Image (cartoon, rainbow, N blue to C red; front, side, top):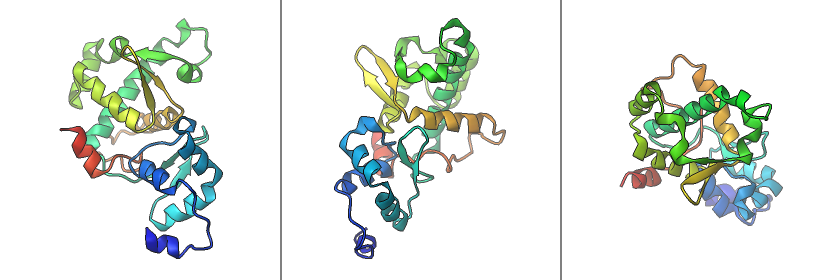
Length: 208
């Protein structure tokens, strides 16, 4: 990283470069909820993009106003499949009940509501239980999926076993649409063009 920075001496280094780089490289999506890191990244996005490109990273800004690294990371694929399936089932359930609410679309209210873990739909039918079992997640394992999403900056955990979504959930909506339409997605598929994720040390630490 030093060589890249020294060769870009004319580019002012952002104040929170180290912290922002560490978060992005770990797979986190940085949004306004990340406070000073997000503000520094947002104010100096061209400099960050230049420096990160020199290190082989592709900084992306989503239309919903958050940042992430495209196509980097080494999270084990089963973890990503579990997270994507968790989202797919939840979004499917929300879509099925959209006409029972006053909102025109569940997507529009997604960031304005909280969810109780005990009320999630993932184990309410035999089909969904089977789907979750196929990615190695039982009811107790939902906590691990939510912990991963929390680390990625997609959800925020709340008291009393509740959580709420943060703006980066829109990245997962994009991914869910992509994989739902991809007939080739299977247990052997590697979602390498998806979310930038946790590095080896963090991934291994989660399983301990």
